[in-house]
Image (cartoon, rainbow, N blue to C red; front, side, top):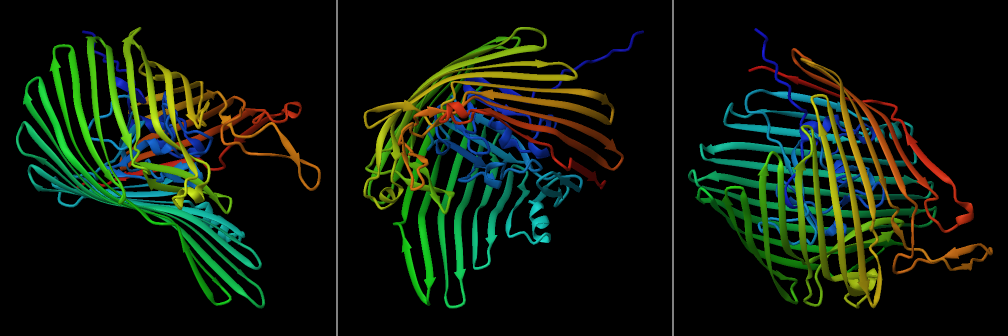
Length: 635
């Protein structure tokens, strides 16, 4: 008798679901190419079709013609206002704690709102409820440690993870005048207060800091996030569930300077702060076998302090600040979900109220999606959404470093957008799947800020504009037992119009290609070696620089900065190669991750001197591999 052999394909790194929803398999992420050996979920999200980071090194998510502030980022249902470490090289989301991640850029559930473009949801895993575990990760840039386990076996768990940028210690040991570092701490406690009710407490705190010590001066710059949330998940019956969340989130940027000589001493500190306190209550009710309801309400109160400055010179203290702003938001939502045979539909609406202390604005946002499943991984979907936004984010350069400002809407005008999406998925071969989606989006009341001081003081400094976005997103996936290959191509056309001028959006990328491949060189029980490759190519970004010049005092040409993009950078190419070795031991798992090559290539990055165009390449080979070791203790 021939023994039965079961061959299973590897799980794909990402799953393209209906109407622009993409979920990432976090377990498979460890086999993906990593920048400098760092396992960063956010860096991978930036390479999804229809999603961009903007300029290289940025940590934002620019989705379908939207800016960074038009993507809502929720970390366990808590809004995050600055998601970057190391000026965008890493994100605040440690790979040791993330359980799931998904981006919704087509249909967004009415339960979420206040952004025009997309919703990104990242959730923290719970600790193990049966065994205590510890892990240590040494990467090229950071050192991370995680502990988790049961509080009471089978009823509750704890999770605590900390991360530190250890090159800071090297700079300190070398007594370098310029030092940079960051840290973050993530924690989660979960406990079943009743067999049908689970209470969870989560928190996060992180900070980045850069300092420069000179003979007669000292400068310090930094930013950080702090969040806390209390979540109660309840199961009232087989047909009714609820979730209640209360949260607090805080963002601060700071700049400190001190100057002194033999006679005088002066110092100053400038801070920029954003506070938010909010709550969410949602219900999921199964009415019949083919009909269910999602409904609930949200509330938030935000305070914005754009700039608070305190300076001391010759014993005299002076203070200056821009006016503080506040925003009160409340919303109710209802979503009807229908299932009948191969058909499924979601029809919902969100009603929101925003009050900035001077004006009150209301928004009604209907949303719907329809899909048909042909079976065998073949489906079609269609969706239409309306979204509104009451927040504005922009950057101001302060001491040559970008500072994020968040402020509420002005003049009683909310930003609005509507979008239509049409897509589908088909299985071309036993191992090959093709997903295609096209969309068209219109936006209005988009503020273009050209004078940050006037804007913050309420004296104008901006104009309202409109925007449109059209695009086609395609993704091919090949999955076998040892090979996982994903290739995506995105075509977009993004235009803005302000003050009678139509121009390409600052992050307009007409052509964007990404490919990810991983192959199991060795795949045996308890042992696995994986080679991974990532290739990214895209059109260069628009650039705000005029072709006209005037001479400076030395006769050299000086080029001005225009309000609108006037030229485009050359094409961009990036490649990452890594090798992962995983070994199952009796008391845990050892994983070695070698980031073999990280390469970025530009041809003639800015085309302002055509006759001086050169090839420029940046190649980074980490001097230390990423090492992960996990040990699991028995009961």
